[in-house]
Length: 248
Image 1 (cartoon, rainbow, N blue to C red):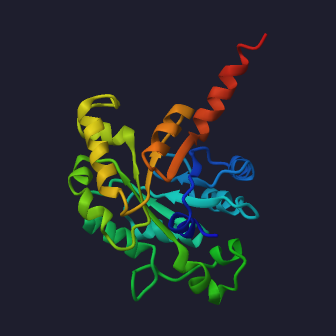
Image 2 (image 1 turned 90 degrees about the vertical axis):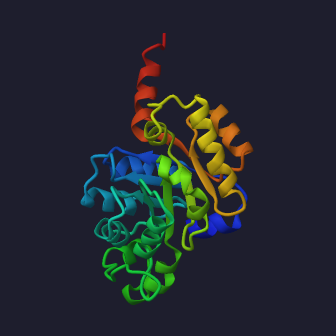
């Protein structure tokens, strides 16, 4: 089942890993280990287009959905990711409903959207004939946005009502920076901003968040979050390496 349909029809969590390391081997290992999705980071990670394609291809044969975080709301970047076989796009720094409309259009073929046709690599990832990709896969592409600015919080009621949006994810690091707190996520101004997002999203659109511990996972799950980033590949690798230095 496609990620988009899992968001619409399942009550359970969808749990994944942000992939910053440019490696098809690590992406394949994470997918094979049972992650529901990987989020290939083209915004902050040193991942080029060829490696992005290899990482997407490495998820084939698993239930793991390959999503890509693009650097901006940029049709060229979106087209490159989707035509490499990505199942969905996560857009950074969305500030308004108009921004979301642009995002939704970029992942959708005409006449409803503006995505250009050219899945010359994507159709092989999905095992479809080239001329049937648009109908069999193209209609199932996920559109996700990051809520990481004060403007997005101010406009959140309109954002979550925008047609074509499949999920919204709170990005705590950038959001805290945007409102002048620089990572101090325990401050009232931050918790109030997140609470506003949670209220607006309730019964409107699935909500995502970052949960790097079991306690954070339990907290967000209790609040109704459906999409969780439970790890960043580079941090997982560093933590595992640091841990064995204490072995006796």
